[in-house]
Length: 186
Length: 318
Image (cartoon, rainbow over the protein chains, first blue to last red):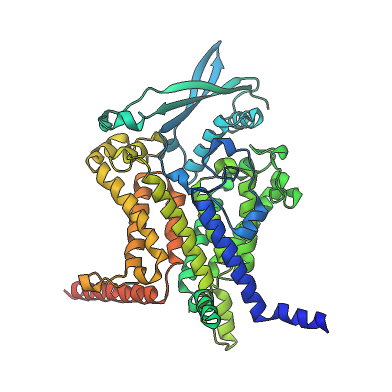
């Protein structure tokens, strides 16, 4: 008797509306808290390299929706990046391919470049090696050839200094470091 | 009193309105996802399988492991086909909610699998997909055409609660970004714009073109912050629906805010390599179109087609 009436209630429009109302309230609170200054530090957000190796809490996404610290767009980045692939020939490293974002195909170039940027920042040696091995395979670089990935970056002047700066002459020095070196295998 | 509160709450969440806005958002979302993921075919195996940059050990979340078989490159391609098929079904409006769910599940799994390629736009794409799960986006859909053939009446209606959630999410995105931008002075003295337009890997054109824009950095920065702050007006529904006809602008406050933000995103898309974010934000605006906005759009379309027809006739017979 009680079970059938409970089941009837669960199927009723009123019950569905109560569930939707509860979901609406929880979800709205979550949006406001996640988007605001109160957002938690351990949440996943895409532009912070420290969280690159973290996974999304998928169950939170399905229940609450997706939280994101939107403050990351508040201050523009000041760093530019370029990359180069170098090959060891006659005991000297020679530049084989210089990679800037505009060299890639128009639709995928930002994604591919983002991967390269994040790989260079990542702690995973394995992923960097896989990237370089992929270059060996795609470009048919001979077996046992040593290749390496070099990162270039420049940082624009900080905001305090740059107020009276002539923006049109901005050309900070490019700094560089070797990210990873491997030997191509077939 | 309780009865009044209940009725107000009920009207706030469950009032019906035209589903054309969410349907346009559905079409835009599916197209954008098809372009984003469809174009990854040549690098698909490298991005998501064990053959490529993502190794088996990288996968730790449940969703990432979903159908643990997706490690091998061959099965990763099967996932690709399933995703493209689901997105085509969403585009044409066949069993929309089921295929949005499947597409969203696959997209989330792929994003979890390789989060090194993500940007803010990918995040919003998932948010928009999440709201499509709940909304009735049945305008311009195959399912409805089939129903019509069976001589059933079809209603293009949606409940307000999915609209309100989408609106709140967009307010949170823009308003909080704008509030963070008001901290300090960089957005008010042109420095922030100068920073944005000097980051080599974001620039679509050679640097000297952006240098011509430098006299406008300050005004562009201030305008951007003000337009984004204006999303706060949506928290007062009566205010955002005010018509501006009294000052000879044939739009409401809401339409002005949406158009201004769309112009910002189009500007960003032209000047910088931030395509996904700009495109998905413009797509999400379609979800905010309500009955009066749709009518205004129809009027605009009629006026435009009338003018173009007149021009066509005028020059055709000369």
